Length: 217
Image (cartoon, rainbow, N blue to C red; front, side):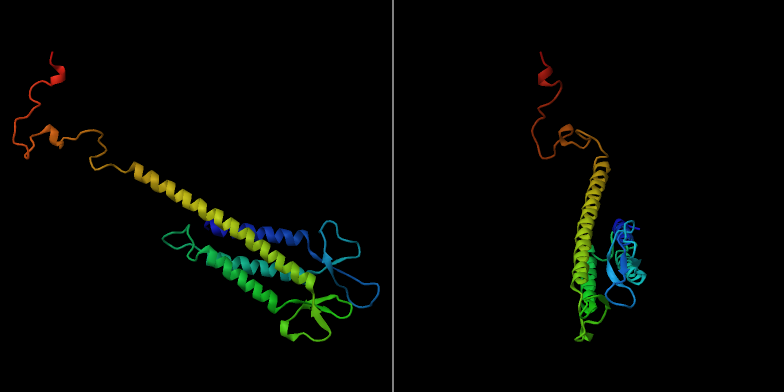
């Protein structure tokens, strides 16, 4: 598991925690008879006494979170030669997931019943009728959460990519510093210095013969 997959796992757990902390609830209207209908998202520890958990909608939300997490996990798998680097660029993975989720939300928007304007369910966008209309509060909530998740993951993936680049640069610099030089790491003149031998291109007498001039009295 590379750092990008770990980021996906953390994001999926955060979304699941948010869904469980604020699950959907149903309520029974006093003005009409029949089964309970969707009311709102309440805190799990502070729900109204007459509210009942909408388990079908909650399971649907958890299902889509898990599907997105699994798809992102598979697309961000590392290559065999570089396990820490995903095969597909994280920008492309995030863009395609956002586009797929946006199309799914717009193709299957939440509908409401008329004239009481109660949430009915998710239907195909082209199957609406006079008795149905799009439940705009739920649709806006879906779009807001999608934009929030996309922005948070974009920032998180960017931080992970910069962290990997910084670590790779430090490792390359350390390896270059530990590598021996061409003279075996020797500092100063080597035995092959031409000033320590006879220069074949100089035909005159050697000036430094005997003692050095600086040591002469």
